[in-house]
Image 1 (spheres, rainbow, N blue to C red):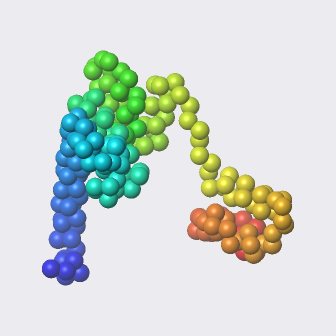
Image 2 (cartoon, rainbow, N blue to C red):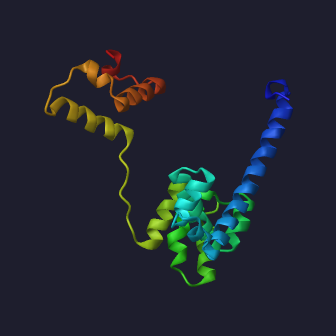
Length: 193
């Protein structure tokens, strides 16, 4: 049956069902990653690492692979994390963020407290909490505005002076202009673009 033929209600219901199936499958995949790692089965595959094994055999991107390995590691170190993931209290990404922090903690009580502290948090909030608890400060990514300003300056005052048309062809500047126009900001510079 074509999705186009489904009623709106049926489409929404089916989407929810497939989302639940995907979440269940992801949790199972994480459990299987842990067992493959425990048995060191990736060594027999000729890939030499769990990361390469998953990339090669399951067609995952580098970021998908890394996130799943780190989340699986968190599940291994914090058994209640599986239930929290199943109950949608935490995300796969947030579990991955916790990975290195909880693997260095001996107390299960402390690990559980850390896990409970990220319930309902965004990735940014979880990352900030992990940084605070680990005493580390991550390098912050520049904002789009900072990148545009940097690109603008480097293009204008670099080895060659550029024309405004070449500046407008820059991806970052195009994206900045698009966002500014869509936000309705009255910027004099944008009027001429």
